[in-house]
Image (cartoon, rainbow, N blue to C red; front, side, top):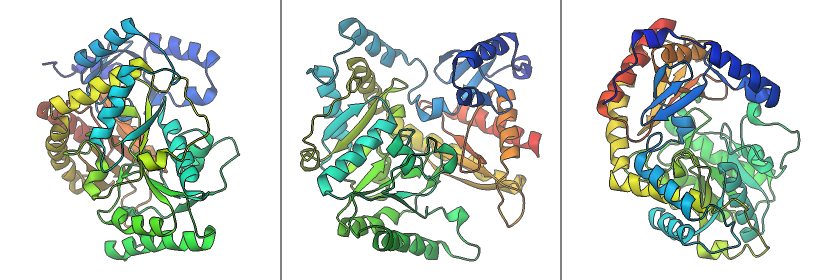
Length: 446
C-alpha cells in the first residue's frame, strides 16, 4: 500500500515547472480559466495520478479526496477500467449517434437496469450540462408546458439553459437566460431562519413550490429539477420527506420530476447506486455525468419510454454515445457493482463522518458537518450565532490541507464549504489519514 507524503513533500509549493506552465497557460486559455487554477493559495499542476493519489510536476504526492470534482469514482487510472478503454480504442473510436454500436446498447441496458422504476430509455451526450439541457427539452416537449422550477443554490452546468437553472449568481455569465425558469427556496436546514424548527422550515419550502407555481407561472409547469444533494451548493442534503412532498405538487401542475445525479451517481451516497433511492421516490427523468465513466467525458439522460417517445424532432449528439466513453462507463459501473463500492461508500462514509462530527466541538468556526456516504462537507463560518460565511478561512484551510498532502474541494454560494469526496475505492486507513490531515489543517488556520 502507498505510504503517505513525507514532511519534505508537504513543504514543497509551486515550483519553477508550475510557474512556467502557468505562464504558458495564461497566454492561450481564457483568463477565467487561469483564475480557476488556484488551489487554495497556489496553482496545482498535475503530472500523473494512480488510485487514490495525485502527483504534481514538482514531485509532491497528494491523497485525493476530491477526485476531479467527484468524477474519478473508481480511482485514477483504474487498471480494469483503463483496459476496457484501451480495448475499445483499438476496435472503433467514434461513430456518432447515426450508427448502431453494441457497446452503446449494452451501457444503455445497464443504465436501465440500475435506475429506479420504468426509467429505461437514454440519450447520451458529452457532459452534465448537456444532459440537463436534454432533460428540460424532453420535459417541455412531453408536457407541452414551458416553465421549470429549480432550487436556489443548485448548479446545473454552463450552457444557457443550465446556467438559467443554476441558482447561484457567480456561475451565471453571458447575460442571456431562459426566462421561464423560476427558483424556489432550497431546504437547507443549516440556513433556516433563526428560531424556526426544521419541520416548520420544510413546510415553508414545500409551500413555496406551490406559491411560485400559482403566482409566477401559468399554473402549469414542465418540470421541477433538483439535485438530491446540491454539489456546487456545498453538499446540502435534501430533507428525507422533501421529494415525497413536492412530487405530488409537481404532478398536479402537469409537470415532471427531474433528478440531477451528475454528482451523486453512482454509489457515492452509499448503499444504493442512485442517490434518489434514499428518498424513496421514482423520478420521471434522471441525469448523470462525472463519475459515470471515471473521468471520460459522458453525460446521460434517462426517462420512460412514454416520455422519450414525445421527442419526435431530429436530434443527435456528435459525441454522445461515443463507443470509447460507453465502454469506459460500462466498465466503471460493473467495477462498482463487482466490488460493492456503494457498500464501501456507506462504510467508509460512516467512518469519515465519525471523525468529522468531532470537529465542531474543537473548532468554533466549523459551522456544520453534513453529507451522505462519501459526499461530506464542512461549512466554515465566523464563530457566533449569525453563521456568517468565512471564505477566507475556508481558502486557508484547503491550502493548509494541501500542504499536508491532502486534496479537498470547495463549494457553496460564498465559497465557504469544503467538499470531501474521495474515490469510492478509499480504504479505512486512507480515511483515517485524511481525517488526521483535516484536523491538523483546521488547527493550522484556527
